[in-house]
Amino acid sequence: MTTSVPDGQSSGFSRGVRLGVDVGAVRVGLAACDPDGILASPVRTLERDAKKNRDIRLITREAEERNAVQIFVGLPRTLKGAETASAEFARGFAGRLADSLARAGIACEVRLVDERLTTVEAHRSLRSAGLSTRDHRRVVDQVAAVGILEHALTMLRRGHDNVGELVPPTAEDRGGIRRDDPNRST
Image 1 (cartoon, one colour):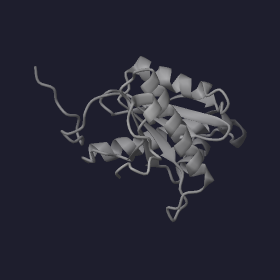
Image 2 (cartoon, rainbow, N blue to C red):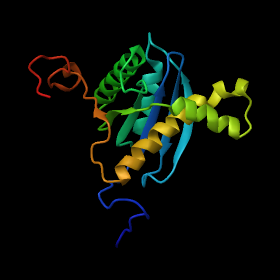
Image 3 (cartoon, rainbow, N blue to C red):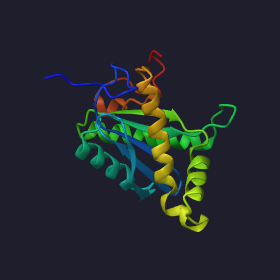
Image 4 (cartoon, one colour):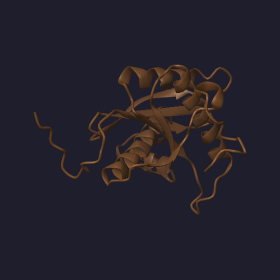
């Protein structure tokens, strides 16, 4: 039996469900794609739970249920590419997510991808779809997560093997070298 590669997709594209995550201080948007990476769709908006990390546990469960192979977390940067406190917040979230996946025994990479302007684009799309600005809050994080995931899928289809920055779990969760270990090679 032969399988065909969808039009415009690199033959190096490995099949598998991927998730996109837009992290905010209050809400977290979640998106997913089909195994062929053709369509990214909004999944849900989660309330950010920095104390108990319920949102991270829900994303871990979603990854397990969908057999996700990668999760792309948006890394907010300025237009000049600099990182701010929001980027550090996203890095911390991605690290806790990688740890949660490792503890659950789920083989799913977590990668940080540039998300410049995804929220701006999400608001623009919602306005053009006729949704009132007041109603954006309910879905803007999901739409931004779709944008993050679509960006990553586009890069994968173009033949980029390592889209974004890999976020490994900490040593305590997988027995390896911690990210902040000075002996870690880059």
